[in-house]
Length: 453
Image 1 (cartoon, helix red, strand yellow):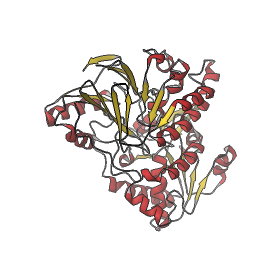
Image 2 (cartoon, rainbow, N blue to C red):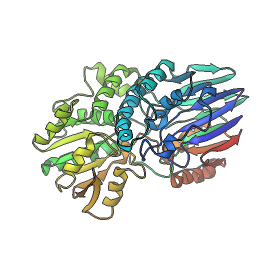
Image 3 (cartoon, rainbow, N blue to C red):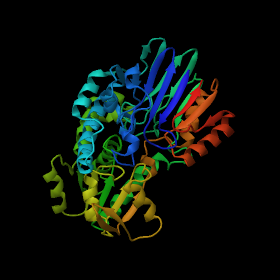
Image 4 (cartoon, rainbow, N blue to C red):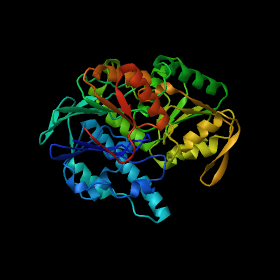
């Protein structure tokens, strides 16, 4: 049994693992390396394996750093089944088409070939099969079962059983308790684990404090008659924020304020959330059953069209703007940032991870040193005078205590742990904790490393 680490190692993004066992080649995720351009060499290089020889792909969740090269895989000759939960399938289709649109602009500017086109996405979706949690899929003698990862809607942990061994691919594990979706499931019997380490050395703020912090930041922004900008990922983080705002506004915990959801993708994804409310936790489902439209409230405006987005500039303050992208690498938030970062009455609130190299990461790090400073947006130097804050409790990733708790359920037969999907410093801190806590060997694999299990 051979395990290949072709992505998602020594970095947070680009998940791509190949398991060769029982005469089969099983791919777990085929993601895009983010924090760089779509057309960076890392994403454009040929696959280090023959896509036509892959027997199946299992997708842990819909984020582009786990799915973004699947259409390229099809373009390069893959013709077999792709498996995930049904929600992941539906969400991934939207995300991939949106990414193709953004990528097209980049490739036209750089005069390069796209990684994939819309036809490749259509071909991919014909191969993609949705499966429920706890259903086992057999690929020859290889058995694969999905469990709820609690990261985003439809996210999965895969337990692979072959050659008398059990291997868990966690994908990204959730930061529970989450506002909407169910808690991460534990797996008790496993030999090897590939576990994420995005926050392998950190402890999140208590989840109960995040709403209090959000409430305080909104109230302070209203007092200044300013604008609260929330760059957010269209998937999960946006719905979490809408859910929290629904509670704050409908229960009169904050004054009524205009809220603009300025992301066509987030608006469409929220519709998918409504379709899959069976994935929600008990609290969210009870609210829905009571008649509460948990993603809608007085003062919320959705702006699908570009002209509607531009009109936000003409609306009075105070107001809240929720827009993509979450790392400020593109999307409508860039336009708002160029206009509003320079006003000291405004606030920029980060509620998600900011990858190295992203504009969001630069702003967050520079804001800790001195204000004002400037960043480059659309070839223009933009001064940053506004307040820059972050709420860690909104992260959809498990922190170190939750990662250790998850592993504690699997420790009885656990032989080895591979830390993935994390920057080296975070991975190494998690490795140290694993060795101390469980006396189990662990390592951060190198890119392209091959391990015999």
